[in-house]
Length: 142
Length: 384
Image (cartoon, rainbow over all chains, first blue to last red; front, side, top):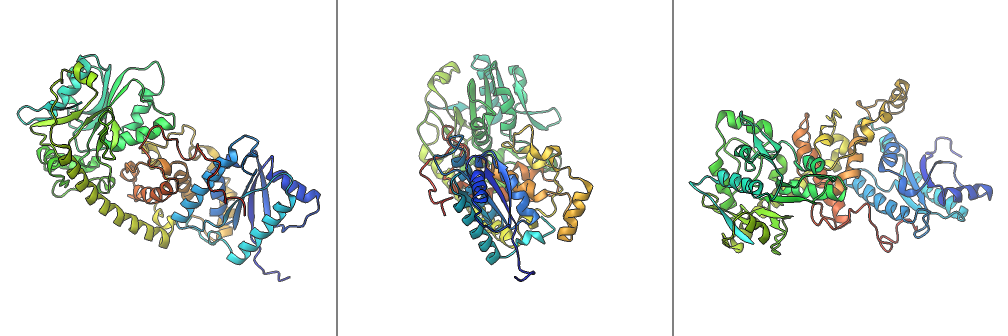
C-alpha cells in the first residue's frame, strides 16, 4: 500500500443506545472496517450540538458522522427526529456559508447492525478518499 | 375597530403621547414601555408609570439603538408582573414573537402597540443629524403618506432598514391581512396624512375605555395596501441585490473571508434580541485553551488565526438562532469592525428558513422548527 495515500480522518458521534452499541457489535463480531474513524459516545444523536460538529470540521477533520437510532426507536422518544432537523439545518448553513456539506453524514444504525456500522464507515472513508482532504486543514484564517 | 386619533395643529407626536397617556389614565395598563427622549434629546426605551412623563415619549423618533424585544422579555416573563403596553416597531414585534416561543417573554397581560416603521438611523448618525442639520420630523412623517421612504439628505438609514420588506403592522382584531406582524393595537402610518390624524385599529372594548368611540375608516384600506406594496417592492429589490452579492462573497471568500476582521467582541450576540442564553458557551472557559494547544494548531496549519474560534462562533450562532433571525440588523449596527453581520444572517437565514418553510416572527402558535418534527419528513435522511 502506498504510504503517501490520503487517509481521511472521521469523527463519529454515536448514540449510546443504538449506533455505539452497533459499533461495539461490529468489534465483538470481528467485522473489519477502516481504522479512520474516531468514535465519541454521546447519550443521544439529539444531544449533538452543531458546535461539536463544526469545531473538528474547522480544525480540518475530513468528515463527521452522527449515528443515531432508527426513526421510532429513540431511547428518549424523539431525540433522533430532532437531530434530523438540526443536521439538515446545519448542512444548509454550511452550504450557504461556502463549505462542503457532504462531509457531514447522519446515519441510523441500530444496536444489532454491526455490519451496517462497518459498512457506513467503509463507505464514508471511500467517499472522503475520493473527495480529498478537507481544505480547512490548511486554511489558517478560519 | 378602526378609528383615527385626532391630531391638532399638525402635531402628530403630541397626539401619540395623548393616546399613550389615556392608556394609563383610563387604567388600561399599569405602565407603558416606550422610547423616551432624555432632556438632551437621546432616545431610549423606558417603562413609564407616570402619565405626565409621557410628554417625553417619542415612539416616532427615527432612531434605533436596540431591539426593544430584549427589554420586553424581563418585564413580562413571569408572574407577578404588571399590565403593560409596549410600543414596538415591526422588527421588535417579530423578535418578541420569537422570544415568546423561546419562553423568554410573555404576551400575557400585555397590550402590544405596533407602529408602522418608516426607517431608522443608527445612533451615531442620528446624533450627527441632530447636531448639524436637525431632524426634519415633518418630512419623515409625510413620507408615510407617499411611501417614498427616503432618508434625510446626506444621511442613510440603518443597513437593515434599507432592505426591510416587513415594515408594516397588522391588527390582530381586524382580520385584514397584509402579511404584517400582528399587534393588539396598530398605528397605521402608511398611506395616512399624519398631520391630520393617526389611523388606529384596536379592540372595541379598549376603544370604549379610551373614549375613541367614533368609528372612522381613515384612509381607505386599498390606499394603505397600495403604499405598503410600493414600499415592499422597493425594499425587496434592494434586499435581493444584497442577497445575491452576499451569496457571491460567501462562495468566493467563504465566511472566513467575510468575517476576516472580526475581533470576537460578541457585540453582535449581546445586541441580538434572539441570542438570550445566560450561560453562552462562548462566554464560558470552554475556549480558554492551553498555550501549547495554540502551538499545536499553529504547527498543524502553518498559521492559526487569532482570536481563535472566531468562525466557530459565527457558525454556531448561525446554527442556534438563524431560524429565528428577524433581520433587525442590530448586529450590524453594533459591530466595531463594521462587518455586514446582519446581511450574512439574513442571506443565510432566508435559505435555511425556506428549507423549513418557516417565517420568524409570524405566527406565535407555530412551533420553532428545531423543537418540533414530523415522523414522516425527510424519510431518506439517515437511511443510505
